[in-house]
Amino acid sequence: MFNLNRTIANPKLWNKRNSQQSRRSPLLFPSIFLISLCFFFFFLTYTPIPNYMIFSTSLKTVNVALTHQYPHCETRFHGEKFLWYAPHSGFSNQLSEFKNAILMASILNRTLILPPILDHHAVALGSCPKFRVQSPKEIRISVWDHIIELLRSRRYVSMADIIDISSLLSSSLVRAIDFRVFVLLWCDLNVDLVCSNGLNAPPSLVESLKLCGSLLSGIDGNINQCLYAVDDDCRTTVWTYQNGVDGMLDSFQPDEQLMKRKKISYVRRRRDVYKTLGPGSKAESATVLAFGSLFTAPYKGSELYIDIQNAPADPRINALINKIEFLPFVPEIVNLGKQFATQTIKAPFLCAQLRLLDGQFKNHWEATFLGLRQKLDSLRQAGSQPIHIFVMTDLPQGNWTGSYLGDLAMDSANFRLYFLGENDLLVMNTAKKLALARHGLRFKYFPVSMDAVAKVEKHCSLDILPDVLLYIEETICSCASLGFVGTTGSTIAQSIKVMRKFGLCSSPIRSAFAL
Image 1 (cartoon, rainbow, N blue to C red):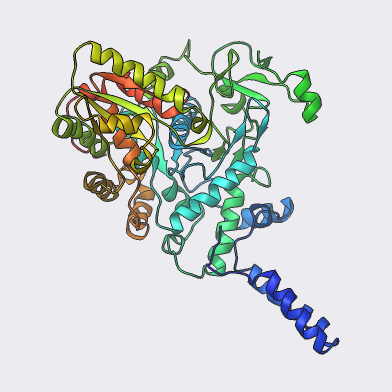
Image 2 (cartoon, helix red, strand yellow; image 1 turned 45 degrees about the vertical axis):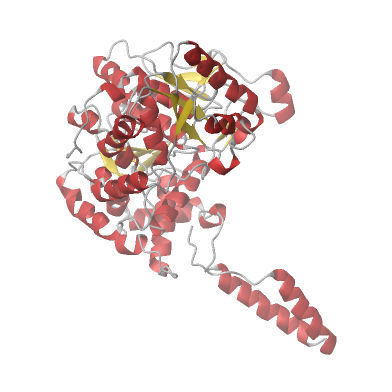
């Protein structure tokens, strides 16, 4: 977290030096050992420290320190209350969690703290079906560490820089604040230092980051009325809203074999989020309600963590559920995707999303190519030649030789292939536009935070352009009039299907929104 670009000398070199000098004089060994030990502790303060060492202060000490440092955390926001959570995994999973966070914040009448987009799999949850996941505290700490890394390396991109939530905000279905703005105010941090990638972090900043991270992560429990840390996760809880009996057993439970092998005794219950964390609860008075992961997915007839499909007695939440099923990309991305389809391909085309290298997909090439082959055969029989194909794949073009993709690329008489790379001019220009637009900082915050927004804009600008290739490719695929072939089990394929379902490509090109 606090990487000051220092390195500790290789222990093997230390041992070599010590052994050479000990042969010369046995009396030197104790002195060298003590000196080395001193240097070790000296350098330890300037090198990355594991999370549990950073936050392993006693509950009493941390409570006293935090209460002293942040006496204003209950009042600085004039009664406004917030919801924070810990996103993880790849972008599609992070987007799914973002939708769940919007829903939970609206149900609990809290302002959502908008997270950045984390590096692909920089933080992992684990496996809910196997009851092997990071605890909410652990994953909040991991996310805090990674966010600080993004800030200090000037790579911070807000989820709202990429996903257009302007319609949600204008309809008052949800309130939101950028994570950087919130932390700057709540933790009273010097944003210039936080966003600096200098070699040495001042001790005061290191201490402030440690205290604020401990507070927001809930590592030492709840702090007065500042924070309530939700420590329920998918092993024990399925969150519901106006659906069934609060506290009843969920249909999916760990089987006896797993319980014996892993020595676990988890019981999953369905709990109403409003009754548990809303008015009248211990959580309700806290300025910040902090969740861990908000990821969910169907599994064995149940949901892994959040099962809120409708709200029988709450029309406002029902309207929100319908709205968040599809959240579009910001106009800069959508417009480029449409323009590529109409001005570069210039013909009806098929989109092939082929995930071939990551995770489980690298072992199922034949199955991945089979669906594409069948679709192309049906198009050829219909007399469409040459067939235009936009290829979205993680397999570099130089490695296509010997694969079905390579065969298609060589058969130019029957197939015309199109694809984009992260260094293509169109992609780079879009990334520059997004860096300048800063959509995530364009919200109408309450007046006290406007100065904080200006400070973030001044000191936390991007040094490295955001990676926008995935978002542009998904938009292009939504415009494929000859159909879409996606990789089975890929969350990216699911996202594209949702975009196609809602007719993103049929809507007119939009101008960049201003809030």
